Amino acid sequence: MKLGYLVLLALGSLSCINSTSNQFTGSFIALDDGIQDTLKIKKSQKQWREILDEKSFYVLRQKGTERAFTGKYWNNNRKGTYLCKGCATPLFKSETKFKSGTGWPSFFDKIGSNVAVVKDYSLSMVRDEVVCNLCDGHLGHVFNDGPRPTGLRYCVNSAALNFKGE
Image 1 (cartoon, rainbow, N blue to C red):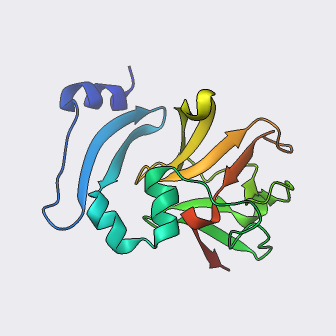
Image 2 (tube, one colour):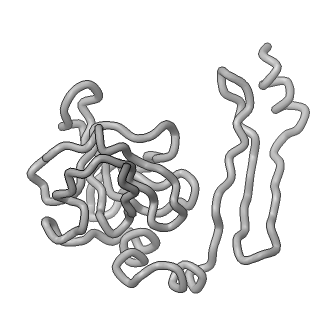
């Protein structure tokens, strides 16, 4: 048994709470390459409203969608990194962005484990929702109609993103 799994069993699940404005919950997850400490940002709806503009709050915290071809980044061709607007986690590299014709920024790959996929049962259908893995902010959805090498299309709302150019 790998050392990471032994430590995981010995430690169990740990939590850490910061008494300042941000609250974090953490646990150790055993991976093939050892233990990764993951922290989740937890804020109240009031705290999120204080740091996000109205459209970003609607998308990130209420799982809204901006209208196609209206977002800031759907046609952005600059080199750089797309970050979560809620917590600044790097989510997508410009090298993975492609023109999907949908009117939303589309990417064929994400950065590491910074984007999580969860089931979305809204609108009387089942879709794969993508969220920021640190703050659980709604980003958009992922579909199996993207280009190679992944075949995926991460369809993301501009209002959920910030862009950091190179």
